[in-house]
Length: 472
Image (cartoon, rainbow, N blue to C red; front, side, top):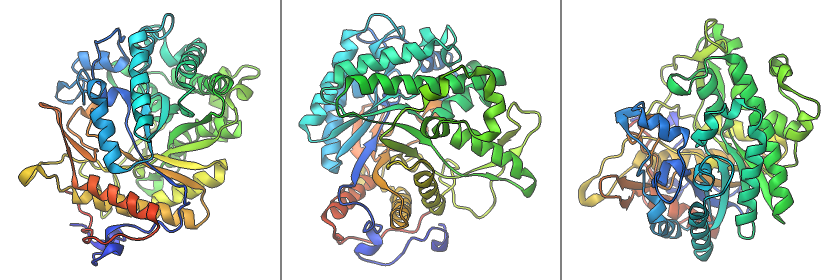
């Protein structure tokens, strides 16, 4: 177990120990959950869906345990059951992504009516359940047909993405008002084009910078496509922001460079109209007249994903001059090795709110482990509860210090396909038995439901103490 002084979590009894303070949050604060299409839908070869790059990657056997997203959580067929879980939680909103290759099997051209109809059913069921749909256009599932002609390194993709955004807006804009253009563009560019390996690695810093600029241009084009077609639309983008810290004092410059690429390469041009100074020389060859104005389109909100800091070391032989480094001793970690530092979350919220002057919604935050079932099927994920309590408490501290924070979405509603880790990592409030697709709410599910009820009522709800956070 990790000493309480490392987490700030009380080991006392009663309601104050069960739930974090939420007194500083707005009365209209939104509580939600998040997922993404490829991680939960399955049905990858049904109803005319095209291949994505992640399908191809899985077919090559390059994911842990040779897992694929072919079935995932079978959400494509079980979405009504999953919406029932959301109703039980009491969430007000659900952030999901639309699968580009399900709507446009080759990424462009004629749309797939069966794919469009699936999201009609999903959106209508959410609204009938009193849950607001928050739609993200892109959560990493590039159509393979577009990747074959360069993907994000091909400037033509700006127009293809705008056409895709227009299709989504025309079909769902009568019912959906909250849109995000991208989820974590820093992640899918850094890992695919700069530091990654295998089939997705472009092995060229030139293509990395070209990719950054094209993603930013596509963001701006999508904002315009949505804004022109959806009256009352509220549009943002979702960024993974976290401190990049030096592994040793000698790594300070590398950590600074890492932070610029990780935390600023996308929100700065999108929200402030310019690339960070450290990047400007590298980006200059790809910027054409009028590009920065095309990127810098008015936004309504800032989506923040945050889990914990990363530690960086200098690596002159790498494409970006840095690599992930050793983590200091004595800092709590999740079972998958991610840092647990609620204070870093608080500070990141304050920095983002001040820098970009937009309302902030936390679109992902959660605890990854490999949950085990207990007696009578209960999953007593006490460490997840303690993590969420600590981080939501830090969010309340940021709000008390003046950050305009308007919502919090747990990652994730369900255990799911976790990219290169396959099904070996679990983030869900709900346990998925992948062999049977049975859904079993964990202890954290009940805890989050109680928190939402307590926070919305404005008064604490009695309950048992929260345990000290441990590493599982």
